[in-house]
Image (cartoon, rainbow over all chains, first blue to last red; front, side, top):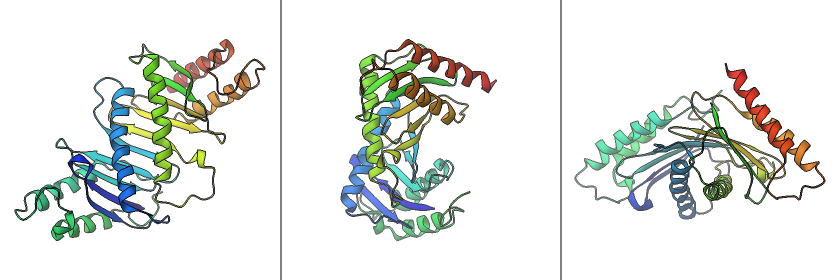
Length: 142
Length: 143
């Protein structure tokens, strides 16, 4: 089950947010995305300090309710997916989404850095079809 | 060694016990700071849940596992809000049993000790010994 997708630009700016199958509606999108982006920054520095030396990145966390997968690019973009807790590691899916982002957003000459990603309909269509085709999109993974 | 360190947090998020199996690179101040950071992260993670909570205790909805590229953190939440978590190195194995055993030792050797004041740091030899024994057993089961 996929609940949310977020893409954050540099400086925590929310570029794209999608939601499916949420059972607890989001009260305030702006507030929630601030929580998520702030949480990711804290988690990264937390992991770097607590883990063995040369820990670079935070990958995922799971609670009893959901699991959050995160992928940060070298340039500071963050791609986040929330799913049900039984879904396995999703780094490859997020890297694939990053590839779509590079091909259809960054290489788009009409796109200005920091704009909402919905200005690139090709990217959003590809993102939707990619996520909709994940085996665990609408069902609880076993 | 698979389990590098083990921490026990009280319900307010302050560190009451920590144990390292190898020479740690963290100072005791760092440990206190990082463990209360974890308490905060865990509370926010529960708050931004996309799924409606099924009426379970709010203390049970925090982070259970956290993966980074070089380690995994596994946490056990008790109904009273105590968090027991450990840092694992690859190859990853499930440490839930170990954490539950530590919880059992906490109830047996700390909470039942008449000299223990609630939410205060744990400095009991018996507890320490039992934790070390559980850790040794945990590592022995792996080979």
